[in-house]
Image (tube, rainbow, N blue to C red; front, side, top):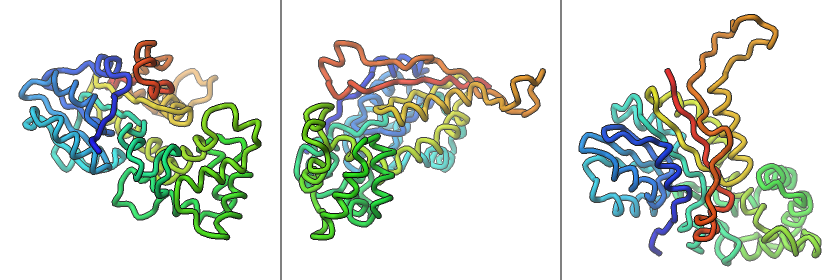
Length: 312
């Protein structure tokens, strides 16, 4: 299947990056290179673009899409949490802009065998990086009931997490749960009929939770943002697009702490903690998709863009 992914908040993200023709820009979630292509169009011969992605299909698709800019472009197969390390290896000590688009790509959702969606019956996979051994099936069949409850409750914010975890454990004693279709049926049985009629697909929250746990999405985000902000050159910006409240909360909190990191008690006349501001939050409220984008691309519905500018 061809790698297709419609880039969300494209114009808003590119304008907020404030691309300089001779700057260095990094996309830590390269995907189908939609945002990347727009950045590359604005670079001069001395500008540089680095794209990072864990997904082999994304790497291939992005390489093809950016082929006209191959002299300026470097593509790396890695997790964005290793961004600073990977750039240092290539003698890059600072960049002018960083982009993270944290959504699952349309390609990943629409490729049934990747197992990301409850819409097709496929093996329980959900790996962003297919070099990884553990799959969503490993979690579903090996985690204890308490661990499953924690994951579904915390990462899915699912009110029926306890019942879903209980039903999963009961069913897997009969036979291992191998496919998304089998899991969807178990989830449906765990949720009262009247509740299934509202609030979207009954498996949506559990599938989100399993994907986040498997790929350690929130942990990676939380441990990466501070280092990325410090890696920006003076005036450089980081743009992060999130797709659910858990991600957005992390980004909002870390941006605020980098703007005002002081931990001194409010009654201290002067700061003595020595923590220095790293810059300023550009988006007091997140930027949301406009009506036109929402009509053209329903998957953009939950997208939020937050921007931070480095000041040294």
